[in-house]
Image (cartoon, rainbow, N blue to C red; front, side, top):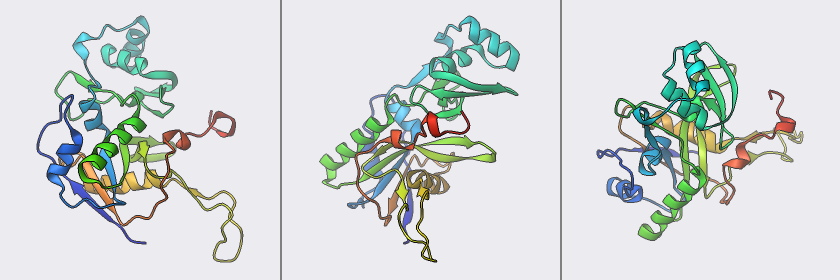
Length: 244
């Protein structure tokens, strides 16, 4: 199977309340049924007002203590703690948390890049809903049935560098399971399950990049099964997670 990754640039700075579907369609005129649209988390957060001015934040005693030990801005640390369900680990100035969504990531997904000085973005409160809302607007405007992935950058245990992963899903199955299928030598596969939404987001990032003004990518020609399952299907339960 071959497929295309088509980056979609927009020139306008996204603000709270903007119509993202309209921005996308104004810059991409050839949408087809079965396309997958990958959207960078940052513009979803901007559109939904999930940004905070750090000057308005009052840090807690815990945030002040952590910031003193790790040379971090106490206001930023307070935002990280607010967005966290728990702290997983802190070392060498790095704060790894479990977000309120259940994601394990650095700084609860709080990010200051591509924003004015003194402003930080937070992850969308419900990325699956964000993906669904976008897809429904596209359907109304174009009558095209698509899948949508909200993508963000995560580090990985035991590996250098970062890659993009899905944090919100609409319209496609998250995992492509090979369980029960035969390999090339006739053996029955038992545990192979491909995190296809993450791999798609990683491929999209190669075309979107961080500084090119391309917050969208269209994946065309990728065969997938429609589904209403969300990002929860990607979160490994505690009872089978060997690292918790």
